[in-house]
Structures are given as C-alpha cells and as structure tokens.
Length: 303
Image (cartoon, rainbow, N blue to C red; front, side, top):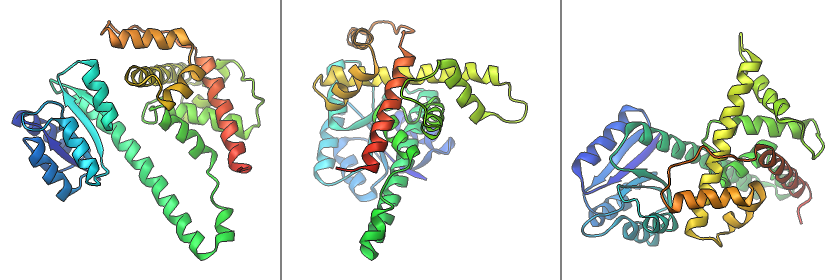
C-alpha cells in the first residue's frame, strides 16, 4: 500500500485529500503539514512514497521544498496541487521533478484518476526493482549463470516504452501491449496490417463469456485513441517546458506528425479550448512496433 504526505497551507484541502486517499483505498496518509518548512521535516522522517504538495505557500513554496528534499536524498514521487494556471510556473514544477499536476479546486474524480496512475507507476517500478535485486543476488552467486537471465521479456520492453511516453496507466496501454506482443510472437513483418485487424487482436485477448468481438474492437479503438492522445499531450507539455528535452526530441517527431505536435503545444501555451484532435494512429503503432523490434535486437545482441 502506498504511503502519502500532504503539504498544503489550506487545512480544508489537506483534510479533503486525506479523505479521498483513504476512503478510496489508494493508500495511507502518514504525514501532513501546513507549510513547506514543517512539511520538509516531516517528510524526511516519515519517508512517504508520494508527496502531494501545494505550489504556492507563504514561507517556502512547493518547488523550493522539492529541491530541498532532493538535496537531502528523499526519493519519493511528487504530485503538485495548485490553482495557478501559469504555464511557466507549471513548467518549473515539472523540471523540479513532479510526476503529475492536480488543479484546484480539488475534484475527487481527478484526484483518484491521477493517484491511480501514480500507483501504477510505483507498482511497476517496485516490480522492476525486485527483478534487478534478484539478478544482483544471482550475479554474486554465479556471474555466468546470471548473464543468461538479464534479458528483459518482450512485455517488459513494451512497458518501458509505454512508461517513457507517460501512458503506462492509461486504459489503452494494455491493448497496445497485447497487440505488440502478438506481432512479435507471430514474427509479423515490419509493415503492419490494417488497424481493424490490430483492434481485433486486442479484443480477442480481452474476450470473456459472451463477449461481442466487434463491439469490443470498437471499444479497443476508442481506448487506444485516447491513450495516443495522452502521449501527444505529455510530449507537447515536455516540449513547452524544454524543447531540447531528449525524450521530446526522440519521441515527438517519430511517433507524431509535426503539425499535430505544434497544434497541441499551441493549444496548451495559449490555454485554448482542447480540440478532439486528429492523430495518426497507424503511424504511432507502426513506429511503436519498430522500436520494440529494435530494443529486442539490442537485448539479444548487446554491444
């Protein structure tokens, strides 16, 4: 179970967040504070997995507090909370190391959705950490035997790309993973079949008693579209903050058409009404598959 720290100078917000976290079964709140200085001290003692922290506080703001905590070795995840909509300030918060941003006034649905994604990332990081620890122990016992176990599975390679795109917790991420594993397992050529066939692959993987495959395929299509739009938004947000960010430079031009990325950045920068957006799903899936194949080859034939 995740442990949480809450640092916010508004007592009503602190109590509301605690109620949402514990009532929803997301975790346990182990420390709460009304200012940055006290919060910093409490967090270093309690060491929560996740810190929800207000951006603006009178004595020491959220960004300052995060930098102080990092300098003192605290390695938890951060979620920023604020009613400020200034893109520059939000950009600074992401540079400081926040994972997600929750807009005030606090909305229960939004808090639960964001913290569920944080929990998913935390769970995967713990899983990967356990694998690394096991391999390290094995390596100490028998270095030659350990070498044969160090290769990641295809699912782990796919999940690593989803994580880098910031969509590991999205509904369509599982569908994308199922499709990619199917393509790799069937040794499908690098050129993909029609999207309809890919959606049916995921629908078949999700089927249960009485499942209508055609209906489920349409649901898969919608989930994947929303997930790909999520990846576009994540990359556009990174690009607004730092156009030379390696993640933005690698993924944005590969996975999306340049004009789509620019339009999304313009929409965010000028606080325009979100557009439904048109993204090239076929291109996204094609590039994703090629990247999976490349990473599998690297695992099999390390330099």
